[in-house]
Image 1 (tube, one colour):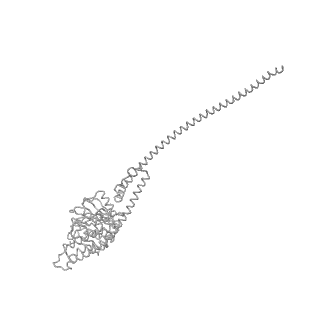
Image 2 (cartoon, rainbow, N blue to C red):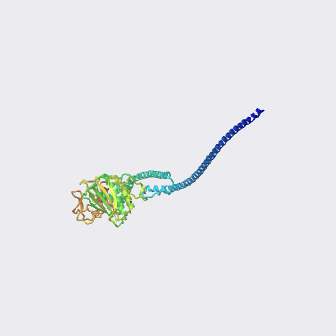
Image 3 (cartoon, helix red, strand yellow):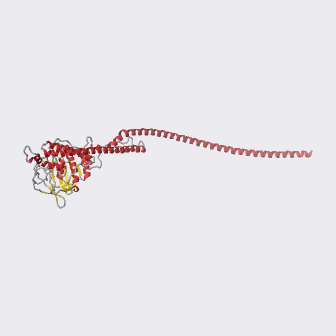
Length: 482
């Protein structure tokens, strides 16, 4: 029992120790669990903080995206509005193109000074659209030019064929009138002959304008006689006074250029008489230089403004192409014909204001187109005689029966250096006028009538072939075309 009593405390102690160990282990486990819980709590708190930061960032990004979407939407609306404005502007430009720009561009093809309207709102429709609109104008102008050239070529061909037939008929009429003049002395035949000459000049003008041959072959012809022949084709010829200052009376124009020069001078003389007062004279001066000859035509007419003068100079310069539609309605072809002949045959034409108040036209015949005819060739008595010292007035060509008035003038002569100098010349007796020829008796034979008209026929026939033409009786002024 005593042993039992002694063992009981020991057992209790051992149990206490065991319980203490269990408790210690339980505390350790609880401590570890508490530490783990704290770690988990800290992790949760960190995760919460991370989540909160992520949510804030996501919210910020969402807000930024919303603002970006709003800006894009605003830009889209602005772009749509701008596109609608561009479409409206483009439609307005297309209407403006059709109604104003295309017609003005077509007009500018024949009138270079005509303005072509610009875009209504430059820069509003975009560079591509502007280039497309310009391409439309260019393509339309090219089409108009092509069609215009085709129509003009067809019109020229038609007129060329018609003028050829009419010209042939007029030459036949001319030959018949010549025969009648040899057989009769009716003055009315002179008027018929002259009107036929004027008609021939008109037809020649149309033929040359249509790029045809002038229609008359000549030999080398004295310049003074070429001018006399041109004068005989012009209404109002009595007003034309020719002063011949040629040093060489037999100075001539080579065969190939004689008739073209006569046609050009006739057109310019017709302009001078038509655009000046009927009571004024039209002085024509023939000058001989070291490099050819000059024909100077003055008038005291109405003159020209700057635009008209520029146009006249352009036409007289002989542009490669002159459309029939450029000559107006009714056509004014004189300058175009003179310029075309000048370019084709090698002489030149220039126009400027005249000291007489109107216009001065200068025709320069270069040395390549002049020659000297043989002394055996008879000169026409109707050609203007050279101006000599000891005379007064102008030795001008006039109609048959108009005696040239002697003049006193100094004629330029070249010195040793080729520059013009002056020397006096003795008077030269004037040829008798047609009215000074003896009047045959009444009841004359055809041979006598032919003898009476011999002087006139010499000038007329020569002017149509190798020598100059005649000057017929006055008829009303029929005007001229520039």
